[in-house]
Length: 171
Image 1 (spheres, rainbow, N blue to C red):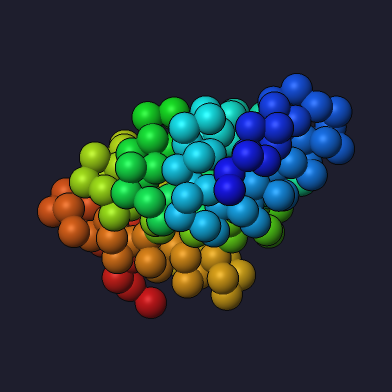
Image 2: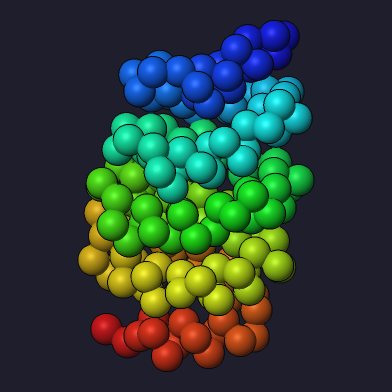
């Protein structure tokens, strides 16, 4: 069932700019399936998607973040996204990406924030202040995703203090 994953990962890795954009779009769609989530991870797709979220074209960044969002439903993938260095690029996308990239990046952060180590990593990378800002002034979707991420981050006692310090409680 996952026989198409390898060629898509290869296109996303070494195809033309348009091929990378299209391959990441397909990976974002097929990553909604549990078996495909595992196959993408097993084929090295998480590290590649993190790389493209960091340094791809605008469209590849949006698509890669969308794929990571779907992949982050899986508990192992939450860990793998962080292990692949994904927290920093996702925070950067949430800070300065397109509207779609911001919405997708905050959705991934909301998913990966369910993991204790990732909660600390998001805080250490400056994500709390940004998420508070987006919860206040982002698009409706970015607000929802940022609030969801902050909710999960608030499980950590230090993060509770940081959320309040960043203005997360005030009007």
